[in-house]
Amino acid sequence: MQNGFSGSRHKKRLVAEINVVPYVDVTLILLIIFMVTSPVVQQAVSVALPKTPQVIEKQGASKKEQTTPFVITVNKDGMYNTSEQPDITLSNKELDGLVAEVIARGQLDKSQPIYIQGDRDAPYGKVVHLFVTLKSNGVENVSLMTQPDEETP
Image (cartoon, rainbow, N blue to C red):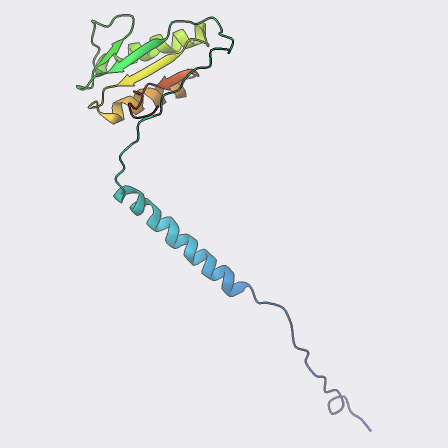
């Protein structure tokens, strides 16, 4: 006679699947390490920004009606001038009025180019702050001016 315990010996099958849990753990640990170390690496890198190559316009291209660009200059002292009143220098306190004027110009004529030109010795943060302020307030046609590199043919 067989009772239920003696004859029911089953062999266990080998499982031929890859256990991915350790791989997921290692991946998450590496992700955390890279997230922690990437800001440190970015702050330690010093970069010399390149000059831009000179762009030559094709003469056969159709030209649209050109509007006069509105140029805002950031001088080396961090003060602002405009192309319409170059003899008047604006300070940081008057920047809000200048931004409001440029926003109004951008709403009246969306095709009018707005250029920001910063002196080579100007505080970089002031140029970027002006650019981001105009872009975030809906002025679409804002560009930074650069000087062409003399070495390009």
